Length: 153
Length: 236
Image (cartoon, rainbow over all chains, first blue to last red; front, side, top):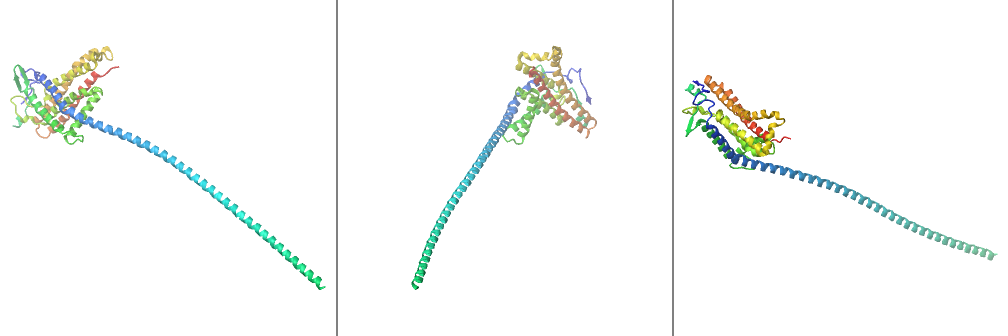
């Protein structure tokens, strides 16, 4: 039942090399060309196209990311400068208002002082006038008294 | 019937006579069936290629990627593209032949002489493949480097010359006999075990056979790619 027939036999044998060899070689070469056009080329095209697409997208995304980062930094510096600008404007306005306030205060002070001075002068003059009148009346009165006394005599 | 089913026939062939030429018919029959199935499978998978792969296309793309990695690591970035179809064909042919021989119950088909089995269990097939590999690496070396290819024989010292010449003979010899021996041995072991213990016991050996078959396909393709890579490599 186990029919081992290795060497020696004129017909067959494990190492019976014949025209099967070159024909098989031709068949494999033909298969190479068939598989190349049927399998390796089309699948390779699709895979490589996709790989290119993916790598392009990655590059594009990286470019966009760096652009975004640049813009972000740009905006940050702009924000910083705007902030300092605003600070400057605010402090300038504060100084201005301070100055205006001081000027107005000074003006008002001066005015108040002037009117006070004027009022004082007026009071003084009125006081002296009243005093004059009073002393004049006192004189008159003393004169009247003197006259009356002299005349009674 | 069971003994008939489990009978072993070694070294018997189905001869086809065409003029003076004698062929091993069973090798061609199984190889045509298996390659036909492979081509149908591939045509179905590549029929409608999409950028967003589905089903069979996914599997074929995985296979393509696997073969590209194999070719690229062994041959190198520069010329792997030219040799990828050849390496891939070797891998697919050996793999399909080995697995087809192991998985399909060919024994159920009666032939007048010999029996159907893995095409790679015939020495003619493996020598044909090995000689193609030899021709390929010579062609790759000569077409890439011209006569400078022969610097390889005296690299790194001229003492290497006889060994390198010897290598040109041992490479196809080892390639063909390794594949032939492994596949034939697997078929024989499974056959003998089925003959002795027809139930259960042969199953682990069959699984081992599938494993060996896949490994042998990978080894054959990798070595072929390595020889081509060795031939096109630039020495400095």
